[in-house]
Image (cartoon, rainbow, N blue to C red):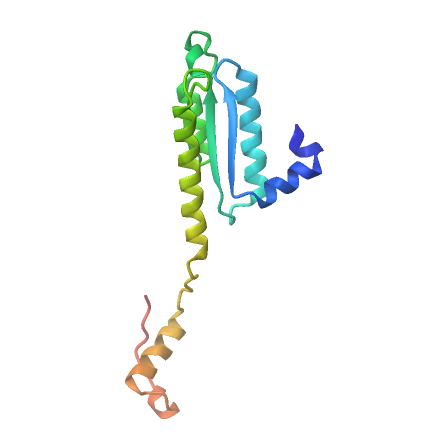
Length: 151
Protein backbone atom coordinates (compact mmCIF):
# COMPACT_ATOMS: atom_id res chain seq x y z
CA UNK A 1 0.00 0.00 0.00
CA UNK A 2 1.37 3.40 -0.97
CA UNK A 3 0.33 5.25 2.17
CA UNK A 4 2.57 3.13 4.37
CA UNK A 5 5.55 3.20 2.00
CA UNK A 6 5.72 6.77 0.74
CA UNK A 7 6.37 9.51 3.30
CA UNK A 8 5.53 12.16 0.72
CA UNK A 9 2.05 10.74 0.18
CA UNK A 10 1.57 10.57 3.94
CA UNK A 11 2.36 14.29 4.19
CA UNK A 12 -0.17 15.11 1.46
CA UNK A 13 -2.81 13.24 3.38
CA UNK A 14 -2.01 15.20 6.54
CA UNK A 15 -2.59 18.64 5.02
CA UNK A 16 -5.34 17.87 2.50
CA UNK A 17 -8.87 19.09 3.08
CA UNK A 18 -10.64 17.03 0.41
CA UNK A 19 -9.97 13.56 -0.99
CA UNK A 20 -11.34 11.52 -3.88
CA UNK A 21 -11.01 7.74 -3.68
CA UNK A 22 -11.82 6.04 -7.00
CA UNK A 23 -12.49 2.38 -7.66
CA UNK A 24 -13.71 0.37 -10.63
CA UNK A 25 -17.12 -1.27 -10.28
CA UNK A 26 -15.72 -4.08 -12.47
CA UNK A 27 -12.82 -4.89 -10.13
CA UNK A 28 -13.46 -6.08 -6.58
CA UNK A 29 -9.77 -5.69 -5.65
CA UNK A 30 -9.86 -1.98 -6.53
CA UNK A 31 -12.88 -1.63 -4.23
CA UNK A 32 -10.98 -3.37 -1.41
CA UNK A 33 -8.03 -1.01 -1.98
CA UNK A 34 -10.41 1.95 -1.85
CA UNK A 35 -11.70 0.64 1.47
CA UNK A 36 -8.12 0.42 2.76
CA UNK A 37 -7.39 3.99 1.62
CA UNK A 38 -10.48 5.24 3.45
CA UNK A 39 -9.41 3.35 6.57
CA UNK A 40 -5.89 4.78 6.46
CA UNK A 41 -7.22 8.25 5.80
CA UNK A 42 -9.51 8.04 8.81
CA UNK A 43 -6.57 6.98 11.00
CA UNK A 44 -4.20 9.66 9.69
CA UNK A 45 -6.63 12.55 9.83
CA UNK A 46 -7.87 11.79 13.35
CA UNK A 47 -11.52 12.22 14.30
CA UNK A 48 -11.20 15.83 15.47
CA UNK A 49 -10.01 17.07 12.06
CA UNK A 50 -12.67 17.94 9.53
CA UNK A 51 -12.15 16.90 5.93
CA UNK A 52 -14.26 15.86 2.97
CA UNK A 53 -14.03 12.57 1.14
CA UNK A 54 -15.68 11.37 -2.05
CA UNK A 55 -15.93 7.67 -2.85
CA UNK A 56 -16.28 7.41 -6.61
CA UNK A 57 -17.23 4.22 -8.43
CA UNK A 58 -16.13 4.40 -12.08
CA UNK A 59 -16.99 2.43 -15.24
CA UNK A 60 -20.74 2.51 -14.76
CA UNK A 61 -21.05 1.98 -18.53
CA UNK A 62 -19.69 -1.55 -18.01
CA UNK A 63 -22.57 -2.59 -15.77
CA UNK A 64 -22.72 -6.02 -17.43
CA UNK A 65 -19.26 -6.82 -15.93
CA UNK A 66 -20.05 -5.35 -12.50
CA UNK A 67 -18.28 -7.00 -9.55
CA UNK A 68 -19.09 -4.35 -6.92
CA UNK A 69 -22.74 -3.59 -6.22
CA UNK A 70 -24.11 -0.10 -5.72
CA UNK A 71 -25.14 -1.17 -2.21
CA UNK A 72 -21.53 -2.11 -1.38
CA UNK A 73 -20.33 1.35 -2.40
CA UNK A 74 -23.14 3.04 -0.53
CA UNK A 75 -22.49 1.04 2.65
CA UNK A 76 -18.77 1.86 2.52
CA UNK A 77 -19.55 5.56 2.10
CA UNK A 78 -21.86 5.42 5.11
CA UNK A 79 -19.21 3.63 7.16
CA UNK A 80 -16.67 6.40 6.49
CA UNK A 81 -19.17 9.29 6.28
CA UNK A 82 -18.20 10.29 2.78
CA UNK A 83 -19.97 11.34 -0.39
CA UNK A 84 -20.69 8.58 -2.91
CA UNK A 85 -21.23 8.62 -6.67
CA UNK A 86 -21.05 6.08 -9.47
CA UNK A 87 -20.08 7.50 -12.85
CA UNK A 88 -18.90 6.60 -16.30
CA UNK A 89 -15.95 8.76 -17.26
CA UNK A 90 -15.97 7.13 -20.72
CA UNK A 91 -19.59 7.99 -21.57
CA UNK A 92 -19.84 11.52 -20.24
CA UNK A 93 -17.92 13.96 -18.13
CA UNK A 94 -21.15 15.33 -16.66
CA UNK A 95 -21.31 12.76 -13.85
CA UNK A 96 -17.65 13.23 -12.99
CA UNK A 97 -18.09 16.99 -13.02
CA UNK A 98 -21.13 16.76 -10.73
CA UNK A 99 -19.22 14.53 -8.29
CA UNK A 100 -16.25 16.88 -8.16
CA UNK A 101 -18.48 19.93 -7.75
CA UNK A 102 -20.17 18.19 -4.81
CA UNK A 103 -16.89 17.42 -3.07
CA UNK A 104 -15.69 20.99 -3.61
CA UNK A 105 -18.96 22.41 -2.27
CA UNK A 106 -18.71 20.17 0.79
CA UNK A 107 -15.05 21.09 1.36
CA UNK A 108 -15.91 24.79 1.21
CA UNK A 109 -18.69 24.26 3.76
CA UNK A 110 -16.28 22.48 6.08
CA UNK A 111 -13.76 25.32 5.69
CA UNK A 112 -16.45 27.84 6.64
CA UNK A 113 -17.37 25.79 9.70
CA UNK A 114 -13.73 25.77 10.80
CA UNK A 115 -13.65 29.58 10.79
CA UNK A 116 -16.62 29.93 13.16
CA UNK A 117 -15.68 30.82 16.73
CA UNK A 118 -15.64 27.95 19.19
CA UNK A 119 -18.22 28.39 21.90
CA UNK A 120 -17.34 27.09 25.31
CA UNK A 121 -19.98 25.47 27.44
CA UNK A 122 -20.48 27.42 30.62
CA UNK A 123 -20.27 25.46 33.84
CA UNK A 124 -22.71 25.91 36.70
CA UNK A 125 -20.29 28.19 38.55
CA UNK A 126 -19.79 30.39 35.48
CA UNK A 127 -23.54 30.74 34.96
CA UNK A 128 -24.01 31.60 38.63
CA UNK A 129 -21.30 34.26 38.44
CA UNK A 130 -22.82 35.78 35.31
CA UNK A 131 -26.27 35.89 36.89
CA UNK A 132 -24.77 37.33 40.07
CA UNK A 133 -23.07 40.05 38.03
CA UNK A 134 -26.31 40.83 36.24
CA UNK A 135 -28.34 41.12 39.42
CA UNK A 136 -25.55 42.82 41.41
CA UNK A 137 -25.14 40.27 44.18
CA UNK A 138 -21.38 39.81 44.22
CA UNK A 139 -20.48 40.57 47.80
CA UNK A 140 -19.63 37.71 50.14
CA UNK A 141 -22.53 38.52 52.49
CA UNK A 142 -24.97 38.00 49.60
CA UNK A 143 -23.60 34.53 48.82
CA UNK A 144 -25.15 32.80 51.84
CA UNK A 145 -27.53 30.38 50.18
CA UNK A 146 -28.30 31.36 46.63
CA UNK A 147 -30.07 28.75 44.56
CA UNK A 148 -27.87 27.15 41.95
CA UNK A 149 -28.67 27.11 38.26
CA UNK A 150 -27.77 24.30 35.91
CA UNK A 151 -28.34 24.36 32.19
